[in-house]
Length: 318
Length: 182
Image (cartoon, rainbow over all chains, first blue to last red; front, top):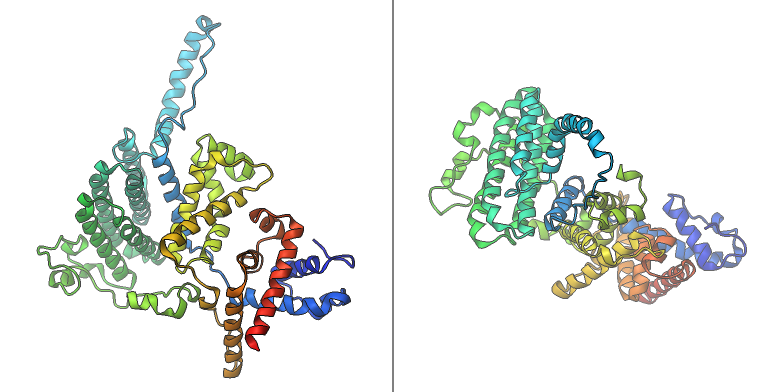
């Protein structure tokens, strides 16, 4: 709303704020058009500018932006009753059916052949472990891997399938379909192994951007796993811990390669972290030290200052 | 395809069970809802969790939403506020404006830096003394930069009343700062 000489002080101030939000400065000259209110409004406009400058609000980070929608939609699908999305079909009219039955039948079969593959594949894309269409979904993934033309293409697909496995775990927990959780966790672990193995292959192409993406994805998956562990049933806690360690290990491998480590330095046994023999795991465990590669220099990007008042909380946690 | 639909159409599709339509609404309102929540909680992670939870609650209660001139963003805002109230009941934890670390501008000299820090602290203290409505209109209009018409629909007021509320809020903030300073 543009202020004019008949505007109230509230309207003039509102107009000044719109200018501020458009990146324009509200100067004395701006307010001079309203001499009767300028003296009162100038300090208020200045306070508004100061608030805007001193208290910036961060936008959601890219990782969250990228992954949260998929996760949310999976959660909604998992929570939705299976019948709600299905629309009732109208009864087909039977008139002239005898005339067209043969022609329709031929066309129908031809169309069915063409679209059934894509249709079923599309329908299966939302399936979770335990669903009838889940094997189709996994089959389609394997097919996509089979037709990928490069090692880095394989790795990118495996990276995306690893995220998908993680979303499935989360969706199962939220839908209380706990009987399939162990299988889902194993699926994730297997996919992660394949991703890590593939990452070692692509290092020859020095695809740093992909490595950054894998590292970022695994970091996010660590966070999701930690969050899910609180809500996961007791009987899968041990498996979740194993998966979490495996993810941590995978991330360490990626970081090692990312920071210039030579894949040939990693023995085959180091690619897949072995479950610790003893229960005395954790930092300082000798076997862990030998199996998880240590990056030369770990990147520890700090949280935005706004998110961390005083900057002490997170440091203490670490 | 969904990106060309308006909110009302997407809502009707989502009500009919079309999850992807709701996904489009999520993409549209992720930023404002996240940023609003981020002004109320202390950590990115909490803000992310609450943002997702807001949209899940919004989806589950979608049948109760009737447009009647109320934009979808106002409905999301109401869901968010209810969620925050629930959270505060549990945690009794809210970030105060004065506790938020500000991103410092390049500092030229120590005096200027001290003056800025002092002003920042005064501003935060004064803001805390304001009524909830005054804090909220400052949060929406100035901190988040939401338009008057949208802020009005979120706060269920007329645009005129919203402008007056903001004017009074800034005047009250200024008086509070002067009182604190004296």
